[in-house]
Length: 242
Image (cartoon, rainbow, N blue to C red):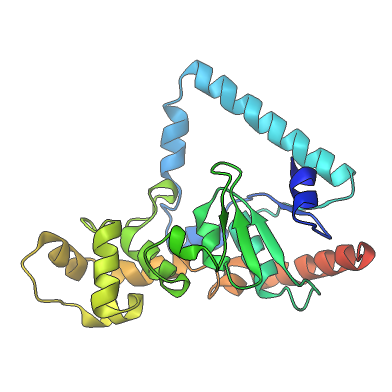
């Protein structure tokens, strides 16, 4: 599947990324992804067996891709999101012109620009700068504000209680980006979600640090990892340059 997709997009190089946890986010918010342990504990024996089988197949696929000469990166304390963000942000330094992100994770849409697009293997749809409006009711630059307001249940990152997608868009249209909204607080209003926003305004700033893959890319990667990752990428790309 990986090689077939690479052929479809005429990719010069395949880079496969895997999660190793996030030391950066755990230091900011210790409960980051803490809900996943609870979900695993609630698995039925059949679900647990299926999950273990999946992880075994994933590990095998990761190893086989590496054996075939594709660059695979899994670093303890680093998430695939941050590795992707680092590569996107430094692509000129690595001599990369265009990037296709292959992931069902919509968080990666934070990385989309005129040279970076995403294909989901789940929806079988592409997200690009050209069809962004087909997927979202706001601009690319507003996606981080949307996420900070609504939170991320999958990662156990709380949003503002009572603020769903529609209210998030309304707040962005009325006040601006996440920092404009924060500066506007306390906002006059009798609605419960406005009161919640005023009471939880500091959460917005925490969420920026947790969710902004672009601005905090260097911090998320960590100074101790940058040299190793850069040298690994440059060596592989130079050896496999078309």
